[in-house]
Length: 338
Image (cartoon, rainbow, N blue to C red; front, side, top):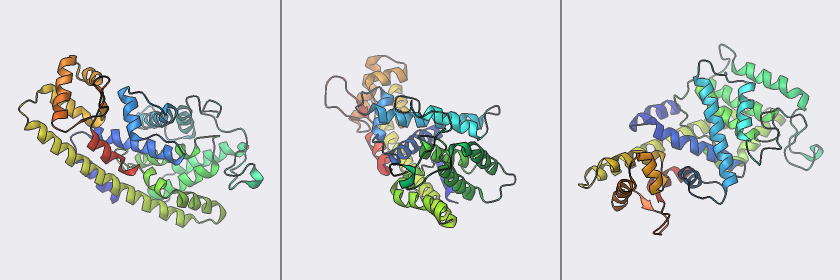
């Protein structure tokens, strides 16, 4: 019911692309923060605006997640694309670990050596996943479980079980947590539980990270599957309600700001077009605005100045040169779950 309400409320905004833009970035950011990365939403927006960053490596890993997720979605929506499968998961992993940090972690390949979680060696580890020679057959069994027809359990329960099983197999040398959580989002679409990936469950998992890891571990040590599934379902409910509130708040803010612009006698077509870009371009320079509007620099500058004078956007540097601007109230709304 919570997922159905989230799907329904998405109709409050003129473009679902606005919601997708923020939801996909929030999930990418939060799932990466669970693994210790320090990037913020503003960092992501700055990178897209071409603004210099100090923590480029962390931001690159978050954007790699977005690229991997986009590739998975493209395949699932393409009649000729790959189904949700071991091969597709490996392709996503290759993209996720694309770059300097992941180059030595066998991107896109199932591990060929034993790994472990916690401790300096397997004998002192918190958890030791299955031996590498068992990984292909275990992932194959998981793939078959996902595609059993008719589904033996409610889809949300299957997703909870599939995530726990994937994390238990731990098939890669690195990136297992992020790929396992990407699998959750992909399965929500696979079973049409959401028309668009508007849920960012990693916010709930991050807030309850100790319990998240403890309950996953308890499925292995104590067979405590019911406790894990219950935790997961509560998380889906809370995350859906949180995303629903965010949609309403964004729709309210954008409507109020559009009214301000409509009431301004100075507003021209460039200002209106720039305003409609703000939910998917919340940080920008005048040059970036000029490019997106396909107009002259003076026209873009005038549009930015009007939105600044109306208090819709803010100049962020306090400088006369190399100025950057932000739709700050919108950014603040999106950042509440960081």
